[in-house]
Length: 222
Image (cartoon, rainbow, N blue to C red; front, top):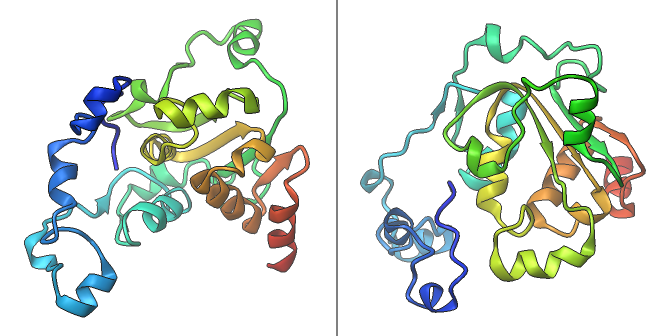
């Protein structure tokens, strides 16, 4: 569930150049994680797959959702407690001990704001620039806050929405604190971001603008 090549050529996609060798192997019956097939015909054998499940980077609250969405709840929290918990009582957290914030926002220009307060040392870049890296704290800006771009993103799979691999890479970079800024009324349309919003709402980690009605209902039912 890491990022693969960005392929815009329709012909290249037809010939499967957007799928890595490892991903193609994992789709074979011998390796494919299909619980139904496993129970019926036993095609999946965990002894044939060696998986690195120990995560030495992140706080448990930051690892819980990607573990459930992408890794069959198999990830193990093995991070240095002194690092992973170093920001879990930060005064700005809506819920102490849960170092994650979703800040709802309908208009904002992050780069201009950072320059205006003289913070040039903060790295700002696309998800691709952060793959393979890790930082104590990460702020994710879902910069496309307009429905006008959603069709293009879905068509080329290059936007932040409609790409679970980009989502997974983005939310698994921080060690101790994750803050996501975005428009929840747009993000709710994507399954991964929808799950993220629900996770934040259930744990009292949402601040900023009003939430979509379906998330508010879920929050009220907790």
